[in-house]
Image (cartoon, rainbow, N blue to C red; front, side):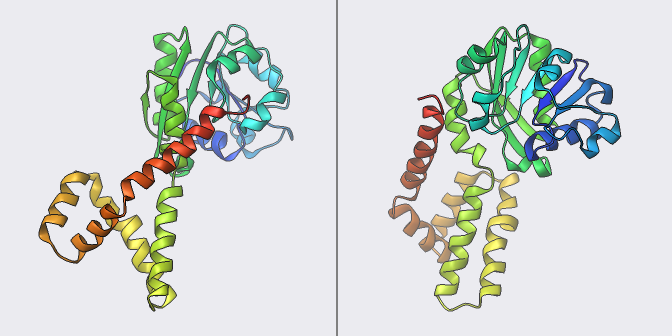
Length: 261
């Protein structure tokens, strides 16, 4: 149970809203301890007893911990004084130091959930800057475990790298599924069959990895020297892993550059 008063700026957006709903449905925070803000001043969450405000500064003043769930480009115009408060930022590419400098927050937690918050399967890494006590760390852990799994990292740069890895959510699987579908269609398969086959590989068959070691599975399939081995070896020979590394570094570079470079 989270006993602190929690505020979510952008709490009716897809990310902030998903977190708010998860907290309420799992009874992790008393409904009276949750404050959310949006510009319209109306949202179905208000009917559940959540305090809804239109003024972000009012939210800050009412809360112990403030979650900022807005797009990074909107942060510059977010004029709040969070002196003495802890801010939990869900924004990519804006450093903890920049957040503290603009808001006067005493402590900042940077976190990077992904779109799987919608089904409560996000992996959320988080990093603490400033004096973050044990109670606040526990709050952060409960907060992100309500929408999946979470882990604290000890270097802020890891958040930027993970923005390009786990923060991308379903982007890489979606790209793989699209490529498999398109290549099957190019090979002459009907589009509906191609889509079913690709979806089975990406969505269904990958669930085996929940209880199997990925590297051991690859090694076993390559050793079998069958159809799968030939396909895997072709991808390995074409420097598949190196290309993935380049993609991750490209995304991380954007996160590190941020919006204040």
